[in-house]
Length: 175
Image (cartoon, rainbow, N blue to C red):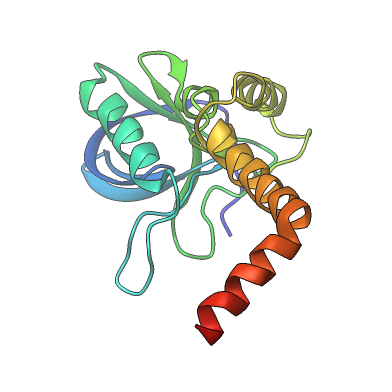
């Protein structure tokens, strides 16, 4: 692992979008793969896996932000290694001077993960995630809660109408 020795930002150009928390950039003439530090977005469909809910939405949002950017910079954190075991750079991504991870979190397209309060932007990322939770955006939206409340209403209906339902089932079987 390569330790971070400076907090200086590297100016990069977008090479290719990968998903909601990963992209390829050109740094000093070389293509590098960057895993956005501090967040984890839902997965997109891969060769052997299905897309997770909001995976495509997170990837589209991230890609649009990166493609429209006039300036993209990477910043490394002293609390983190610069490169992970998959040879991906671990960096905060700034798009036109705004922390992209925070923007993704505010929309509810990722969760804060893989960092602690020792990281430079930890508090900012947690606040962004809390905003999405409070406003029920993206992965924190009413879709998840609706599924749970729908299940509870089904259980309530079955309990209330169990005799009638069983009677109807027996009628269907024996008639």
